[in-house]
Amino acid sequence: MANICIVFGSTTGNTRDVAQKLRLIWGREDADLVDVAEADADLFARYDRFILATSTWGAGDLQDDWEIFFPQLDGVDLSGKRIAVMALGDQQHYPEAFCDCVALLVDKVHERGGTVVGFADAENYIYTASRAEREGRLLGLLLDEDNQADLTDQRLRGWVERLRKEFG
Image 1 (cartoon, rainbow, N blue to C red):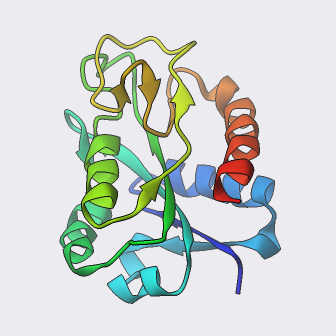
Image 2 (cartoon, rainbow, N blue to C red):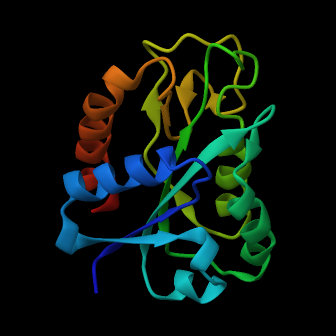
């Protein structure tokens, strides 16, 4: 079994594709990739480190499969788990709610006793407001495949470097 689990939800395929890139950067043999549409709450008992990846819909909502799965987290004990969050969003069309869904996942992880890692710098983004930013830093990695796809690989590589240290 790999030592990290990347759980993604994807409607159009963009988040799946980015999660696959993330797995390749991390190392295929060290990271398992799980579609949240096929997951159950027991998944969280099998790993100690997770990356939760979602796309953002509407004005900051979770991707549909994450919306369906989200209530299952209420019964999960995340104590001792280290969890990072990654989201895709659109800064140009939703500058006032860019990747707001990250806050939902981060708050749920805290509520269930988990430790959130993988905070990122808010530099080089073009949005006006985001619940995914607190105290001047992003609660996870935010990616904009519509307007800044050319920065995705660089951002993923830098984030993985930080996560390797924070995951221990």
